[in-house]
Length: 123
Image 1 (cartoon, one colour):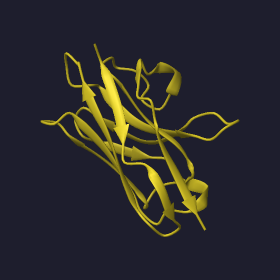
Image 2 (cartoon, helix red, strand yellow; image 1 turned 30 degrees about the horizontal axis):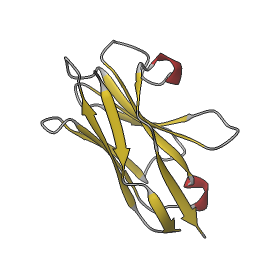
Image 3 (spheres, helix red, strand yellow; image 1 turned 180 degrees about the vertical axis):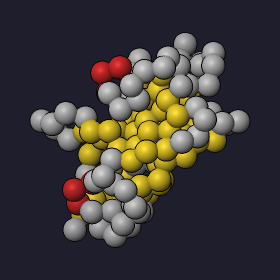
Image 4 (cartoon, one colour; image 1 turned 90 degrees about the vertical axis):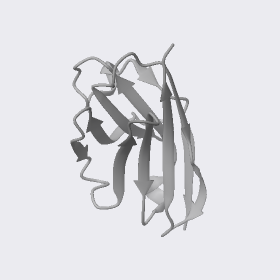
């Protein structure tokens, strides 16, 4: 059974940093793509960063330069380093993964999601 478990969220002041983790288990193969999304109440989930099995990464324009996605394959853990936090980063952050060759930027195509970790940034 595939499971994704996020951790590392919290309440921080603007300008601070956080490192989110997503522990993955149960995959038969290395996921084709893994991604971080975030969602605020009343809005659709926003894709932030994607990493594919060969290691290539892409970022939403809104987070380029501040967010870094990485993966520790032996530990099956996905990370999101968030620097220079701003209040607009306040959201629930989710990791998602899929072993199939999906469109990695389309949230509706991911089969597996974690429960989320809350990030709150105060000014």
